[in-house]
Image 1 (cartoon, rainbow, N blue to C red):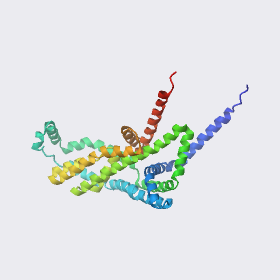
Image 2 (cartoon, rainbow, N blue to C red):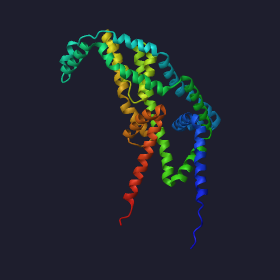
Image 3 (tube, helix red, strand yellow):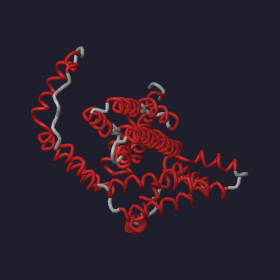
Length: 354
C-alpha cells in the first residue's frame, strides 16, 4: 500500500509562515495588550451589572453601554488615577513627614504595659530597646527597604501620562466589548472548544469565573478597607488623609493591608496625647484590618468556587511577576492550571480497571 508523499519543505515553510505571522501580529498589538487585558477584566467582572442596567433601560444596549462606560470612569478609573497621582504629587511631603517623625524622641513605656498578662513584660522590654535605639536607629534600619519600595512603586506605576492614555484606551475598548459581549464570549468558547474540546471550553469559562472572583474579592475589598481607613483618618484629623488613603488602597491591592498606614497613625495619636481620638482611630483600624477575613472570601466564592489560598497566591505572585495586571493574570493562570490538573487526575480515577 503506497503512502502519500509528504513535502517536508512545504510543511516547514508553512509552519514558519504561520509562526512569523503570529509574531508580527503580536508585535503590532503589543502596545494595546495592557488596555485590552484591563478592558476584558472590567467587562467580565461587571457583565451581570450591565445586563441589569440594560433591563432597567428597556433592553436598549446603547443606553446600558453608555451608563456602564460612565460608571467605569467615575467608580473605577477616576479613583485609581487619583490615588496614583496623589501619591506621586505628594512624594516630597511624604518624605518630609517621615523625616519629622524620625526626628521625634521616643517616650518611655507606660506603667500599665508591664501589668498586661502574658505579653506585658516582653512588650515593655521591646519598647525599652526601641527607646534606647531611638527613631534615628529605626530610620537607618528601614532606609534600604524604603528605597526598594520606592523603586518598586515607580516601576509598577510608570509615567502618569502613559497611564492616563492607557486608562482612556481601556474605557474605549470596554465600551466596544460591552456592545458585543455575547459575540466575544461565543468566539472565546468556540476557540477553547476547538483547541481542547470540552476541557478547553471549561477552561475558558473558568478563566472568566476566576477574573470575576478576583475583581470582586480583591478590588472591592481593597476599596472598602481603604475607604473605611480614610474615613477614620479624616475624622480624627490626621494630616495628609487623602494621601494616606491612596497609599492604603495600593497596599490593599498588593495584599499587604492597611496596617502599615493605620497602625503608625494610631501610635502617633496616642503619643500626641489625644487618647479619645486615638481610641476612635483604633476602632476603625481594627475593623479595617480584619474585615478582609470575612469580606474577601465571601466575594471570591461568589465569583469562582476555587481555594482561597490559590487565589491569594495568584494575586501576590502575579503582582510581583507582571505588575498591576498580574493581580488578575496570576489567579487566572493558576485557576486554569489547577482545574486542568484535577480533571487529568480524575480521568485516571474514572478509568475502568484492567
